[in-house]
Length: 90
Image (cartoon, rainbow, N blue to C red; front, side, top):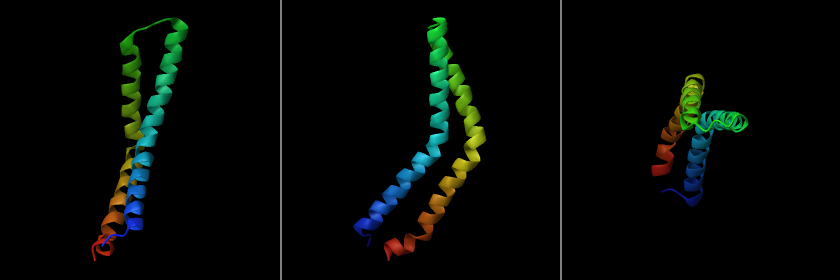
């Protein structure tokens, strides 16, 4: 039977895994969005597609660059979770 501290630990580890896995892509998206917004403000160009296309390209590139790290982090979490399943159930 799971104790309250074990449940909290599982939730904490899961949330931390999500944060660490999503952080590289989100940081790149925020940085590109800020750069494009500054460019739009200085040039007075208010084209909506100008904001989306660079973000999509940057996110795809960041997935290529950080994909192995993200996959490894998720894999470590799942292996750790499955290795402790007997402890949690029995």
